[in-house]
Image (cartoon, rainbow, N blue to C red; front, side, top):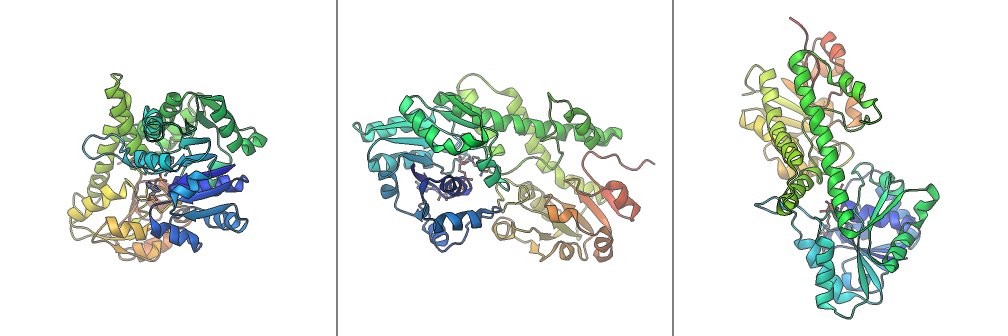
Length: 438
Ligand SMILES: NC(=O)c1ccc[n+]([C@@H]2O[C@H](COP(=O)([O-])OP(=O)(O)OC[C@H]3O[C@@H](n4cnc5c(N)ncnc54)[C@H](O)[C@@H]3O)[C@@H](O)[C@H]2O)c1
């Protein structure tokens, strides 16, 4: 199969490398010439574990190339995937579809023979039909079908998720398009990946329903964590106690500072908007958005209360800035609420993140960056864990205590053992963990 991928972001780049690894010929195009330049030089514009080797192997094998010439890539392709951004539209919370529609118009001009135009971007229900309308209007005689193939990969585990997905969802409406999509994903037949073929609207709704459900699960356990803190229960034991019930499942029951990232915040907003427009309001999802937004704002107060009501003049060491580990993605990260609120309270912030500091530097003015986690802790009056990078779990608490000015930790990801930390002389506050009695 010859594939054109429009967009070389987290989804477009990973999908391109993985499709090439499946054996397809892939041309990945982006209008950001800087990104394409770096990719052509073998540099990755994003951090994603294993991506550099996968890209290099497939470029060397001649199956993967990068460019800015959309027309050439599309003209020769059997399938064109749109993987451009769909951020939140200013003002009303709906998805901004301008990039998708602009890509559709460019694709229309370039179509050669029969082509399946696939939306891989997360797009509100109805977008696939609009893409078809745009193309049809521009090129009434063009031979094409549209398809919806939402992407479920997680940043940080994107390659594994793409190569071994729980399922692939494909919305198509013609046997010919179905055949092309089946051929694109044929390598996954060997590992018996379930293929869910649906109509286009169903595939579009499925993506939002999945993300909204996961966001709800996180928000649910976060509220249970609040209750645990008040009544002396331990949310981890509660999560285990309910998660072992097969109907509930253990995943996504880890409490924290509220969900962030490039998907859940914007996708829950877009679903709520679409649903209101369709006169089928998603009141649970609307509540999830509200609870999560308030939670992210409240986390700085948690630090303030722990420090006796004020952080004025305190040096706050921050561990982790990205919205989750194993990515450099800062979009809607809880740190973007927590750090400025602490600064506004008069704190001096010294932060360390293994991959996110370059991006964080643009978004969080006035903070200093440390080269290591220990350096961030050095001289600190309190240490705040915002992202649960694996390497933080292995830190030596004794060494942290030695370098801190005051041994105090607010652990918003519960990476440390409260009893151990308190036993070592730390004042320790986690999320949803019982506090010492008395
Ligand atoms: N990031 C994730 O974990 C994830 C997971 C599943 C689904 N998604 C969805 O996938 C889509 C893409 O997300 P992302 O995180 O990869 O976005 P991104 O912002 O990292 O990348 C989008 C890329 O598209 C390029 N682009 C925009 N218009 C273009 C055009 N007309 N021609 C060529 N290139 C163009 C941009 O320059 C950018 O490099 C979104 O809809 C998102 O919701 C993301």
